[in-house]
Length: 404
Image 1 (cartoon, one colour):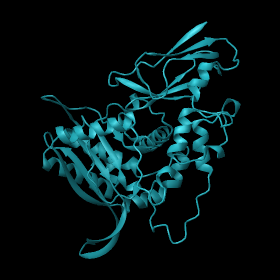
Image 2 (tube, helix red, strand yellow; image 1 turned 135 degrees about the vertical axis):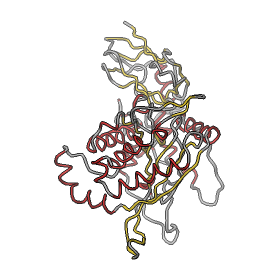
Image 3 (tube, helix red, strand yellow; image 1 turned 90 degrees about the horizontal axis):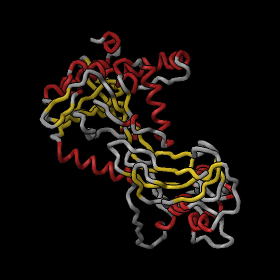
Image 4 (cartoon, rainbow, N blue to C red; image 1 turned 180 degrees about the horizontal axis):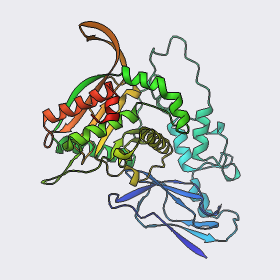
């Protein structure tokens, strides 16, 4: 019996998606719940799995095609046994492959070309030795680092090397690639913020001595007590932000047309970096979470972000956002508000600096904090007081516990 495979029903905020990768080709056997195809939206990658055992009979959309919610993309022959792949399978796989060349999925071939990987050196793990995207990634991860060229490499290498086809010596070459759907959406939202908000940023600095000493004293006991959850700084920063948001509800509010929406809860978004771009999963009801709950939640979100497993629901909503550019070495920045929120807190690199305490110059581990806020709703006085409240709680963590 033929079963129709359709694109998932997208949420209202998502209009369409791009078919990213076929993990199965026509004529190949599949098992129930086995991954068939990835569909990339402007927020997440959605996975479509097989509804039953059988054979993938036909595909109606190629990699890179735009698909709508509920659109028919393939047919599965339930209970059928795989046989020799039909001509359509070969065409769908890659019509340009010639006899003697390694069999490779289109997505894997594209990735190998972008990263300058010789496909002949990659071992395929797919059916019949076919090379899939994961094989290319695994090959790159296992490859030894290239030896530095004598007297040629600069003192500081760029974070991301150019693809091999762009690194030809003496040539002014370029490569044009389309933005991913998610990167395009990020660009649109950032431009929208700069045009539609009265964004302003206030700064302060915080002495991290007390927090670092607290972490040093209890990190091993904390990890043992909470089943391997590590004690970082984010947990206490979220707790401090929650207490400050309770005192200054405008910072936790949003603007809806001519109305101000005050939220009686604190849903804190934590910016997480992924290969596809910056994503902001949300810690729901953070006011009811312990430090251990927050640390565990942030870790789980980070793992999902790296694997592309975050759901749209996990990234929707949020009343306030925290971003930590310090993990990448940022000393100071002005974070951009995540609409419809009206404020975002930026953490930065901890750096030993001379500061004056009680008339004496001492060296302390200091961090710059930045609060970007929408001046249409939040006055400068309120923004400064909010940031000072966080500073005081971080410099004296007992205030977080006592809620003072």
